[in-house]
Amino acid sequence: MADRRLGVGFIGAGFIGQFHIRSFEGVRDADIMGIFDVDRKTAERAATMAHKLGVGQTVIHDSITDLVADPAIDAVWINAPNFTRLEVMQEIADAVTSGKGELIGVCCEKPLGRNVPEARKMLELAEEAGLLDGYLEDQLFSPSVQRGKTIVWARGAALTGRPYLARSAEEHSGPHMPWFWEGELQGGGVLNDMMCHSVEVARFLLTPPDAPREILTPVKVTAHTTCLKWQEDRYVEQLKEMSDGKLDYSNRPAEDYAHGVIEYRDDEGRPLIVEVTTSWCYVGAGLRLSMELLGPEYSMSINSLDAGPKVFFSRNVTGPIGEDLVEKQNAETGLMPIVADEEGEYGYTGENRHMVQSFLAGRRPAENFSDGLNVTELLMTAYMSAEQDTTITFPPPDLDTFIPAVARGEWNPKEQS
Ligand SMILES: NC(=O)c1ccc[n+]([C@@H]2O[C@H](COP(=O)([O-])OP(=O)(O)OC[C@H]3O[C@@H](n4cnc5c(N)ncnc54)[C@H](O)[C@@H]3O)[C@@H](O)[C@H]2O)c1
Image (cartoon, rainbow, N blue to C red):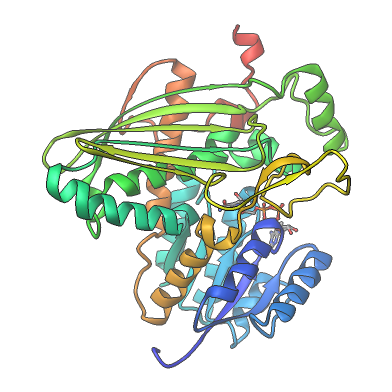
């Protein structure tokens, strides 16, 4: 296998699918050979992008089964919305187990499932179909995270003791598509959508290099959720407009702010703390990822908006709105940061390189569906904590059946106050 290339197929080629396509410019030994998207125009746009970038002779397929059956495809990336996870994975598994197609592996975007039963089923389906599995958590592969972690552990931790506190936050001004805002379709609000990143990157930073995930044991979870911005009348109207009247945040909101504390123990029983914050109500230049790692004689900090060049445009520079400086850009004038290589800096290039090389070597990726399931378990415990307004000992007994109130359409902070 080492002397061959990996033929990759994409299921879903919307916002994140196109991010992945661009990242493949920096991925060796792989070609994007096929795309299936329920929206043909999106598939065509994405295939044209892949051809232009020279990342594969991408063909458009009419179904997941056709894509899997294509002999040019060795592995598939699931980039479709959360509410399609199980049906997509089931069709992949059926196509493989019925012998219609042969695959080495499958990768899945975050979250692995909208709740624990879904995430567990994803893992089972991959196992039953004999597929290597990769969980697409890009932030772990961000060069700043990778390099920061290596240096902290090699110098500060080696000489003065392990880090004991990790903070991580992901914040922006709100998702681009209506389905993200709907608790039932997405699985929750910002906690499910973005805390998955923050929980996993903080856990990763606190784990010694090359140590297994099991070295940290989650002990307790405390979380708080609320809706700070999007239940205000004018923002309720804004959401109605972007969804042709479907979203009604007055009566069926999802949380736009979530905060959590996860208490871990390491293999020697030492207490470790993770603090995570996520929001859809951060209005700054654009998407902001921040992380900190603290130990007895050192600290490390990352802020994605402070890492690259900055430009200043006076009020006389008027022009169309865009996202050409940074993802989720909120302004075109004034002092603005540029994220020079978004696919690289957020971690997509490194993550896809790792997935491709793992599949070519016949190895299970370091970040896999078991990790995706663990993340989902922590997120669901965070929802329980927020709903019960109390600290929850991990794992709570009803984790395997729990569906957050926000995903059942039964959550409204206005009614609670
Ligand atoms: N890693 C990250 O930071 C990150 C960022 C954004 C989104 N995501 C995840 O990626 C996934 C997609 O998000 P997005 O922003 O690209 O959404 P999107 O709505 O922009 O795109 C989804 C695409 O999937 C297609 N689709 C819908 N149902 C399908 C199906 N059954 N089979 C094939 N294609 C289907 C749609 O037509 C659309 O083109 C979500 O699970 C989301 O959570 C991850």
